[in-house]
Image 1: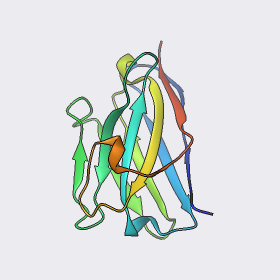
Image 2: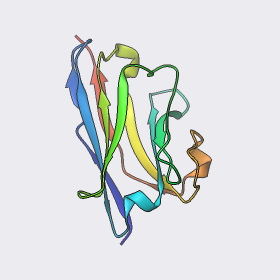
Image 3: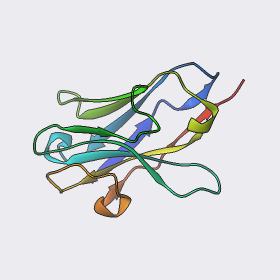
Length: 124
């Protein structure tokens, strides 16, 4: 069964850090482009970051550039999203997704396999 499972969300104070994990089962993550997305209540889904299958190029949304870092551990078949200097506006449900596209994309419509999401809340 092809599945993505996110974990690592929680409640953190502004300025704090969290590391989200996206673990794959039923397929090899490194064969796919992996994206991180988030959706806050009342807002549209937003692309946060992605790592491309073809050349491991990494892309970040301007809103998280310099604060978030994506990485991949092929031995654990897991992609991580390290989130530092968190702000209240980072509060959202975070999803990872996989795509057969060889090049990274921040468009949700380019991804066809999604995890269930993990909640991140940044509040004092």
